[in-house]
Image (cartoon, rainbow, N blue to C red; front, side, top):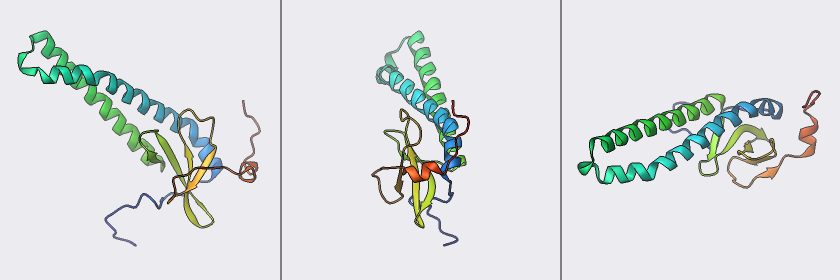
Length: 153
């Protein structure tokens, strides 16, 4: 329905085929690795930043400088995470699970909205699921046969 103000994440707008997703995967992998690294850095900064924030009224000047530097560094990581998320969105990729950093590449299976699914650490694209489901299914061999790899290294 046109004019709808609420964007439904269950119904992906883009429709990507398996071959296109395979080609996109290295770029998406790089973007997700950046997100994971930056989240890790934020998590490492958090305890020191919380401690300095807690005692902010009693800090010496060098401690205040450190607090400001941590705030700037954290803000930079948050900005870069946001930029990476916008880049994924621009590619048509959906973040399905922020905790495990699982992404979905929108497609259609049997005329239903679906996703090819991938997360860092997985060896290539291996699973898919319907948009309204969360359980991943293995990509059938018949789908993979449609992709011709002539120069896989």
